[in-house]
Amino acid sequence: MGWLAAGDGYEVALVEGRVTARSTRGRGGGRVLKSVPKAVREHPETERLRRFASWLEGHAASCRAQVDAWMVSSLPVPTGLLARVWPDEAWQAALRDLAVVGEGAEEVGFLRDATPDGELRLVDLDGETVRISPATVTLPHPVLLEDLDELREFAAELGVVQGVDQIHRATWHKPAELPEKATEVREFAGGRFASRFGLAARASSLGYRVSGGYATGRVRDAGRTLEPAVWIGEPYYDGVAETGALCWRDADGRLLTLREVGPVAWSEGMRMAAALYAGRTVEEGKGA
Image (cartoon, rainbow, N blue to C red; front, side, top):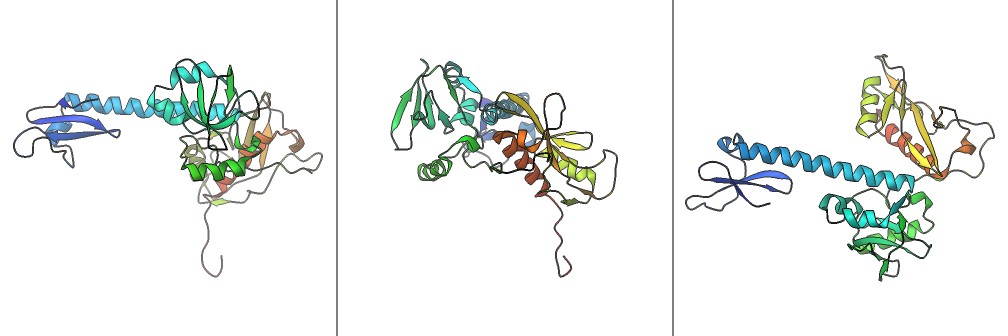
C-alpha cells in the first residue's frame, strides 16, 4: 500500500502494521516522522488505515489459529487449499517453514513454497529442495515426529523461524506404564496464585477456556475430540487459589483413564498444565 494524502502537507501509510506519517512540504518533504501529528491522527484516512491495520492483525491471528488447529490435530490438509491461500501474506507467514509430511515417511521437510498448480516445495533433511504434489499433507504435531531432535537441529542450521509453534513446541511423552484405573496427573498441581481470578485470567491469556472450575483445552487425537482440563477452583471464590489435577474427558464428558489418552492429547494437556503452573507465585527468601 502506498502513501495517502492526509490533510495539508502530510501523507500516511501502513509501515510494518502501524500507521506512519511523513511530511510532504519544505526541506523535510518525504521525511518519515517519529510520531503522527495530532491533526493527522484525526484525519479520516488515518482512521481508515487504523481500521484496516486492525483487520489485518485479526486476519493474521485467525490464520495462525487455523494452522495451529491443523497441526495440533494432525489433520490431512488438501494440497490445493495450501496452494490457494499461499499468496496471502498472513497465510504464508503462518505456514512457511512448518514441517510437512506427504504420502510417505520419506516425504518430509520444511515448507518453502506452494505453486498455483498444487505443488509444494520442501527443504528435506539432506538440505535438498524437493517437490511433492500429493492430494493431502499433514502438518504433524511434534510429539508424532520420530526425528524431532534431528529436525530441531536442522531447523537451527537453516535459521528456521516458524509462525506457528511446531518444531520447538514443548512436548511430553506419555509414560509406557500407568496405573490401570488412574484418571489424573498431579505433576503440576499446587501452583499458588494470589486469587482465583488471576489464575483464570492466566488461563484465558494463554488461549484456554475457563468453564466452571476448570481451565480446558480441546484436542483432536486419532479421530477423537478430547478435552484436557485442570482444576483452578470454584468460579466465585475470591481467595488464594491453586492449580489442581489434570484430567481428560471425551466428547460426551466421560472421564478417561490415563491409559485411554492418546499421545497428542497427553502432550497438549501436560503443556496446558505446565503453562498454568509456570505463572504461580514463587516465594523468595530463607523461609521459601
